[in-house]
Structures are given as C-alpha cells and as structure tokens.
Image 1 (cartoon, rainbow, N blue to C red):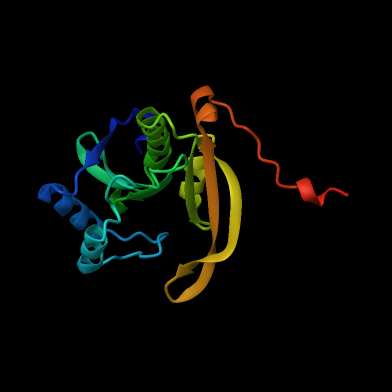
Image 2 (image 1 turned 60 degrees about the vertical axis):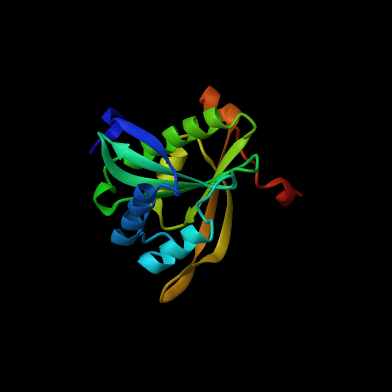
Length: 188
C-alpha cells in the first residue's frame, strides 16, 4: 500500500514519438480494464484509436503515471477544448488496490487546473460497481452529479449504470465541497 507516501509523477506523452506510442500500445494491451467498455483492447483496436486521433491534442492529452519511476497507469484527458474536461484513468493490474487512485485523482485535478486556467470544472464517469474509483473521487471532494441508469454496456452482461462526478475549480483550490441539490422538483 502506498497511500500519501508515494512519489507520483505525471508525464505528458507525445503520440508522434514512436517510443511513447509503444508505451501506450503495450500498456493498454497487456492489462485488463474491467470497468471500461473495452475491457481488453487488442493491439489493432488501440492502434486504430491512436490513428483516428482519439488521444491527440488539442482535444485530448495522454499522461503517463509513474510512481517511484515505474509506470503504473495512463490517464486520458478528453474535451480539453472545453471548460469542463473529462478524465479517463487506467491503472495497471498490479497497481490496483494500493491506494494510488486517491493520490492520482488529486494530482490530476492539480495538473488540469494549473495547466488550463480557463477550465472551471473537471468531470469523470465510471460504472456504478467501480467502488474504488468512486471512493477515490469522493475522497478528493468530487460530487456525484448524475446516475444514468443502464447506459454502460458490459460484454455478455446486462448494461450497468454510469455515474457522473465533477469538481469545481474553487472547491479544489479551497478544499471545500459545494453541495449538489437534486431534489428541487420533488418538493410540493
């Protein structure tokens, strides 16, 4: 277990660099991601996504996540041309369950808000059964803003709920959480 004692670093990846492309291909095809729509992407599918610009700027960025100099994850930042980008976190199988997620979510918010002064909020979506990610978001002041019932396809199973979270710049910087009121229309 790492907890807050880990030396976590985020490194911007450049997909024009063949060595960076190779790292992404290797990482995404040698790990399973049970809470993603494509839980075990093959090399051809990942290569096609790269070629189609799924990870390319200005709308997207890929960050390598290292702890103590070793690769433990990849983060894709989507919608960077908007004031509310979305994070997509993927930890290696061997790195899960070690307390990395909570530290990583905090570091990602630090990174995005520092690098993008026009960003007012950051968003994340995950499956309802991805308890570890949901706890990591909540521990960092993110607020559950929506739950979309049966919208997340799962291979060979019924669709799961997708749960949306967000954090406001001012909440992240102040360490507070602006409450979300969802029962406005239920009042008599």
